[in-house]
Image (cartoon, rainbow, N blue to C red; front, side, top):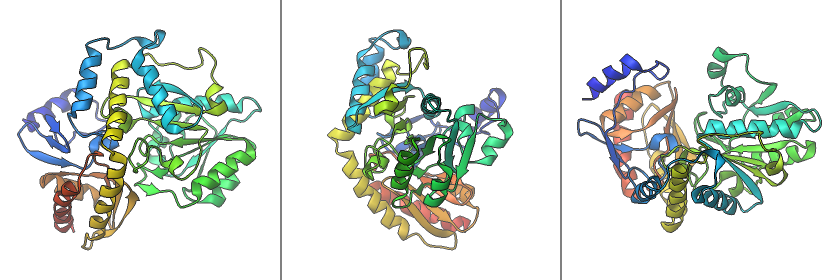
Length: 393
């Protein structure tokens, strides 16, 4: 069945992904099942998207009820799920803010780029500063601030000007962010860059420098937000107030949605007609996002993420063998660092043992499981991962 589906894929799909090695037929909780009936413990979570795992009753119920009422309105009309979700997000942020809904993280960051242009237009600022190895999306705008030459170069020239600085280097950031800078874009921890947490004090230094020169601080929490680190927002957990915050991935629990929050004056930069999205803030996706937030609160998943994340970290500390260089991360957002570029082989070996992990970099394995992961799930996963490391090493 999987082989047949792969052949059909190759006949009709563009080759930008290559052919995925696994077909998925269904899921339940932290488990996925292929068409042949094989089960896989999912530590990828749809790349940090499936916050409540698969087929969670709260999302199933919310989506079913909403689609039976109205599935789409465009941006021409009001609807309760969209307004309620915006209110919830502003409430969670705890700061005066305004919300724009999009369909993805890249689109949320496109909104943030346009806000930075509006901000910079007041005194002729056009430059954006971003981080080496940072990732903000694959549209031309979001790609322009993605600090990965392999992704950028084939599509140049890109919008600019953009200056890239080494992530975590506060002195380099201080030198780069100046009077010409409209905005500084940072992730609270590099996601696609290999799950690299920001050094202590780095985000505070970024906030201080932006305040000194009048630039916007944009925190891309597409991967880190909505509980991934055990906090609603990773930046605020460090006491850092953003001017703009972008969200997606786990917000919809599997339904496509992104959000850009402009804090304070940054939320007032757009005039009518400045930006829009036909599908953004779709009522079905908004209903799913409300169910995600409600469930995280009702089931105390922020505390669970911290507890299970620590249990996972201790287990990763115990991994051994010549391939293991260490591990890093926070909450349920972790990476196993390898001594060689063997991540692809480890991912394949783990998959053969019924464990899904992600070779995010040639020498790093990313773990971004559903937030409902338990300590028992961790204890099931780690021997499979150790066996995969032993086989490849």
